Length: 242
Image 1 (spheres, rainbow, N blue to C red):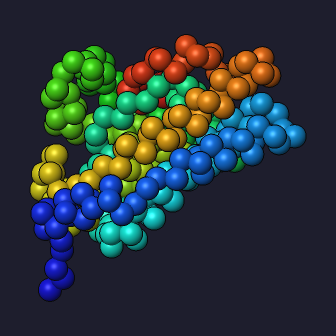
Image 2 (cartoon, rainbow, N blue to C red):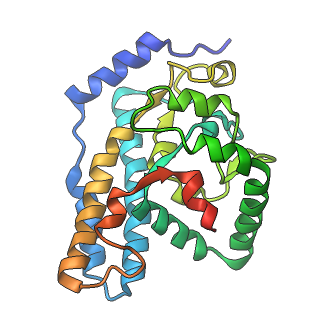
């Protein structure tokens, strides 16, 4: 019988991270510095920086896991975490949508058709759910989770993300290291771990790059900078326009 880590063991390993691991912020800034120097369009610079910064978040997580010997138990086709609300700012939403627009036409059309059906099915519920105040309501996550409304980008037939490589920070930093059944049995399991603190390095580098484009290049193309950085909302609200 397979033995899984207990919540105490997981918490102990995670608490050790601050003592034995230091996030290399320079790696994040090297990405945007590289793309700032590239002979490419502003749009391509933004999109590629965004994608590589997201990949760096995933890489940092893998490095931390190796350091304290943690191994994710998340299973292929498990999508219980895809029913949590995802909050991102308008800049991230615009870049994410632009990345999807650049997917191969068949994949892009499949996502758009899926979204059309999604909002037809869940639109009424989302009207009330996206009015939950995520800044003031401490229970907004639980209220949203209880609704059993999936993420707009979740294919509920395959339980796979339709835009996996550009999924936001909250999605890629939520991990289970114990019995995966806890996600099935509990709406908000205490055993799961979030590495969402990596948002600081990711957003710091992305914001600095946008500031550079705004001040030095005078062009942030489809981004309204800095206004878009300060507008936050549910992912389900941002994707409705697609």
